[in-house]
Image (cartoon, rainbow, N blue to C red):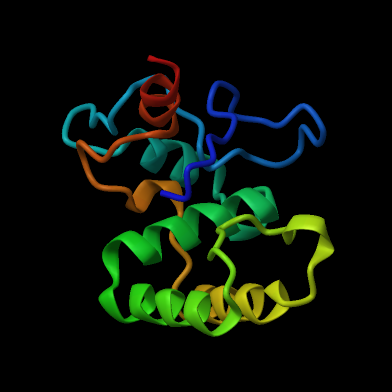
Length: 138
């Protein structure tokens, strides 16, 4: 996780109610109902694709996931930090519009072109943004 807590308490975003929030949850950990990820039925019933999710939030979800679960991608991120002397961030819009982050965003987008993680791919018992929020607050 990058340390940023994303809005998790609404499934559709206020700024654009036509797009879905991939971080939406009501639980601290990903809980499965009847053995299924709760996002699975939402995505299947509505026929959602990656285009139906907020671009920046889906980018952050994927970036966080890659860094946590893929050693090669995490190693690339650490090397990027050393080369650029800046922290790797999974925020879609670079801090202060710093052009150094363009290579970072391009690389994560390249990873997403190979495999985009949707919320129905998150395994059971994985901490959610709600868990991260409670960790920071308490």
